Length: 308
Image 1 (cartoon, helix red, strand yellow):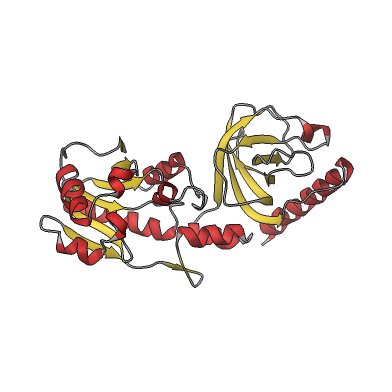
Image 2: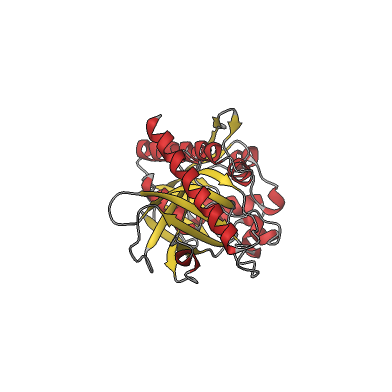
């Protein structure tokens, strides 16, 4: 997969293209990307994705923008897994936001990308003030064809990044994972912590988070990146109100039956089931008892999942 940071000054060859943020690369996105690859093969064109960083909502209203489901690295990994040939990561800034719909078509799609076929969702909007829609795109499509993708429903709900975030925020991890088509996951490198978990009898791998995550609380998780097969465990993601007043969000993972050094390793933590919300406890003894209860409940969850 070829990664382009920004748009080329001029296209080197025509492409089949889809456009979007693709946050989470959920099942609706997967259907769209699969259709893109199929069409590109039929047309003998490279399959290309145009996506944005930052998210437009982060540009227009950074304080109220929703948390990302994926960082850019994770999104690109999913594009690669789905056999996309090219990805154009466009910086969403004032210049791009100010383009009129017709300028976006002529300057970006035609002149810089030489699109021959474009796939968008049926609710696609583009250009300054989101003034362009599918009919606008088709009206300007003199050198390329336009196809729209119908909504994908999962468990009676439209698959969307918003739906995934809402499911995660209310603790319905199972529904979020159904919308995603795989477990929701956070990846990162293990950093040195305060060693408090080890003192309490539950050594944890600490992963710093650069952005506010869409989940919080205590979860049964599966951890990748250790020696051998993935391992089960318990994760806490939040501000640790019992032991810290910093407000900094941290992901802490206790891996069952594993006590090797993990500092510097890149782990992927899959969230499978929420056990409870984060809470403040009166002292470390109470916190230790609750952690023990969480571990027992998580082990029971995995035991029942294996038996099912």
